[in-house]
Length: 276
View 1 (cartoon, rainbow, N blue to C red):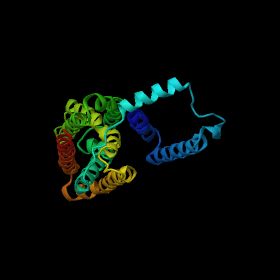
View 2: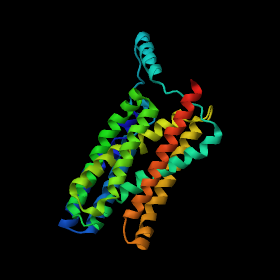
View 3: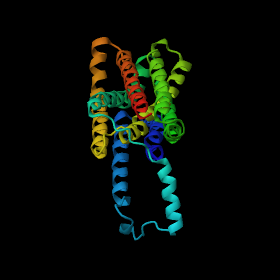
View 4: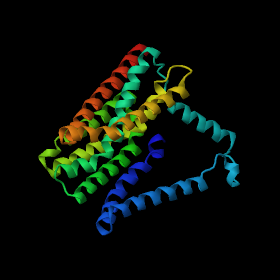
């Protein structure tokens, strides 16, 4: 359910890059920005018009059914309820660091994908195609990552997607080789691992919250993620001014995703061993 709810951003990343490039080529960069701002305004108004807090606000009644169906539904949900691991407060700062790193790679890494490719000699159209491929893989990954986490367990599921994330980021660091096939593989793996920034954090915040602090932990995880995204939204520009390439930023991001993967998987291994 978390993956399905978060799938929209992947669809946008799949559709908009090529469309925006066409607008820029046909008119101007200013027209592309005007289109995006108009689209954002339209979507904001649409959400405001359609979204309601309660079914009664749109003349609907809350879902109800026979007592037998309700009990059956509750039984099914209870089988899928995620176990709270009761993370000790002493380990929370380490996990928060991992959330900041995941925010850096998920937000900052995605924002600069097109610039990375064009700065290393790829055409604007091909860079837009690569970003769209990454968005398509992200959409697919969001849909199925929750299933993987449910079937394989959170520890193994996290490990699988961190391996994809690390492999994709490592290949992005080889963009200067100018290999189109390598760039394609890089964005596929990167896009598949990118769902950790949405689905992964949602699951970790539920399972790793200390007893009695679930809502606060969810909020703090999201704040840490947003902080990472904020930091690496502007930092690559400064690093490029210093070193002349965006590859330095992606090398740093590679170190961050490796560190966050080690932290999350190790934390789960420790907590699982404690519950045995």
